[in-house]
Length: 181
Image (cartoon, rainbow, N blue to C red; front, side, top):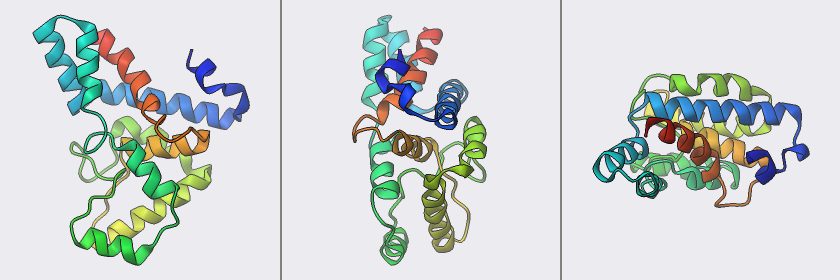
């Protein structure tokens, strides 16, 4: 069904493979990490016993602080990097969407390692790396891309219309959530 929505015949085999890897990574993360959307889904399911209400609850907490894919895509992939402005914002406490992880502070989330290993051939990887380097320079430590950053990268490769990025997160999470129910 996802291939019908995305019309995958328009994409290269490498990009199709990358999308499959991202889907697996999101599915793994939704089971292995106690992220807010999964925890919300589970608690709503326990409290209501209604899968539809539980899915709505899980989806409702995505975006903004949790899974800011649209914000990450806009900042990293839709704008030319203004290094000085980014440095200044980070120094003032700005958290760059698409970077940092609540569960893995000193490494890439293991659920997304396969995707990180696979993206090096993409032009988008260079943009992600430039932001990562600026963050490291200002913070004095490495802050790794997170699920939102990787998803934004994939959305940019697929040239999804703005606002459609969430489907790349939601499709694999829904499958995981339903399996939990």
